[in-house]
Each structure stands twice: as structure tokens, then as C-alpha cells.
Length: 244
Ligand code: NAP
Image 1: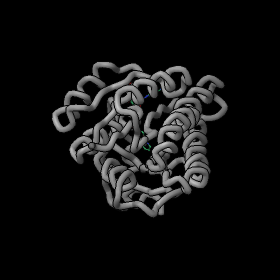
Image 2 (image 1 turned 60 degrees about the horizontal axis):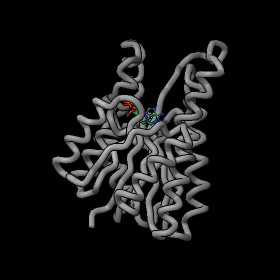
Image 3 (image 1 turned 45 degrees about the horizontal axis):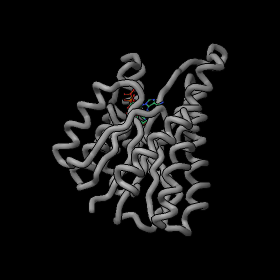
Image 4 (image 1 turned 120 degrees about the vertical axis):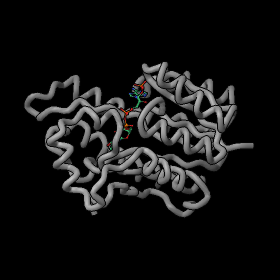
């Protein structure tokens, strides 16, 4: 039987690249999205060419009822979950003095609380199975900070604390929890940055290129499976040398 992976926010960007990479590697993929049904359907259609048992589930990861309903479907459809990737993320950038409370809360709710809510439901299944791998999508800015992103950086730093704590809680049950901290990856999230900011960032990357969603997908595949069985509680930096 093929392994089951749930990737939150996999309608687009890095999540989509991971969905395709996992499907190609023989996993059955659950594509999650919040609002962009058209993109999710297009992703699922591509995923199903490699992995026909795959499905998509709409759920807002920041909404506990929605998350629980998603897991009812997962249980009914597959009865197990081998890998969870907490990838859903948003940004609402701005300098602190101009940032609204709503923008702060929303970013924390999706990026950090969402990972907690989804991990809790996944953890129930994985504890019963006595196996599993959870991967949290942090960010370089959760480690080094970034002016104009105090909400996002706080959420991504929080994910590292969540990762290490859950790794300690779940290790004895053969459940590993790790984080990936991407640098600058070419997706819709970064496409909206002004050209001068992008140029400046490129200058800070020793490898002289932005990362691709596929660069992150390869790392996620490694952390998910049998090649990383003694790795837990770690943050893997995938940033072209932007931070060492
Ligand atoms: P993206 O292209 O903007 O895609 C975001 C994905 O998250 C979409 O699938 C979106 O679904 C989903 N999503 C947003 N809010 C959600 C919610 N409340 N519930 C469920 N799904 C939700 O982003 P990306 O660049 O691929 O980033 C993916 C992850 O990597 C994020 O956690 C991001 O913070 C992190 N990251 C990205 C970079 C980068 O340079 N791109 C760097 C470091 C870390 P819909 O399509 O339905 O909106």
C-alpha cells in the first residue's frame, strides 16, 4: 500500500511542487487548499496522473472545525496518515507601527496556529500507528528576522519552537518532526516584491539564484522518508547560502 501524505496549502507554489514530487515518488497525496479551488483542481489533475488514489480537501487550517472535518475525510478515505507537511502560509507585510492587529493575528493564525491544529489531528493518527513524519515550513526570516515582516517572522520562529517541542513529545513513538527554512523561493508569494528588493536579495545569495519550489520539494521528500530515519527536531536551511 502506498504511503499517504497530507500537504496543507498545496494548490500552488511550494506546496504544489511537493504534491507532484511526492506523487512521482509513489505517495498518495491529499491536496489541501483554502479558497483557490481552480488551482487545487489543476494540481490534483497533475498529481493523479502519477497517483490516481490522491484527493483534494478544502479546509482553512486556522479553523479548528474545518481541520477536524478534513481529518474525518482522511480517516474515512485512507484510515491512516504517514506524512504531514504544514506548508500553508500567508504574509501581510508592513512596518510594525503601520501593521494592524488583524494583520498580525491573521498571519499568526494561519502560519503558526494552523500548524498546531493540523499536527494535533495528524498526531492522533500517527500515535496509533506508532509511525509518522511531520514537516513544518518555517523560513529564513524566522531565524534572522526581517524589517517589515514582524508578524511573519514571529510565526516562522514560533514554528521552530513548535517543531522542537513536538519532536521531543513524539520521538518515543517513532514520529519525527522537522522544519524546513527556505530562503527566497520563486513563487506567487515572492513575485509581488518590488524589483529593486529582489535585485538586492539576489546580491545576498552566494549561489546567485533564487530557489525553486522543486529545491524545497527534494528536501521534504528526504525528511519524509526512509533516508532520514534518525533525524528529528532539526531545521534544514535551503537558501543557496543566504544564511549560514
Ligand atoms: P503561495 O504560493 O502563496 O501558496 C500558499 C498556499 O497556502 C496556497 O496553496 C494557499 O491556498 C494556501 N493557504 C493560504 N492560507 C491558507 C489557509 N488558511 N488554510 C489552508 N491553506 C491556505 O506560498 P509559497 O510561496 O508556496 O509558500 C509556501 C510556504 O513556504 C508558506 O508557509 C511560506 O510562508 C513558506 N515560505 C515561502 C518562501 C518563499 O520564498 N516563497 C520562503 C520561506 C518560506 P489557496 O490557493 O486556496 O489560497
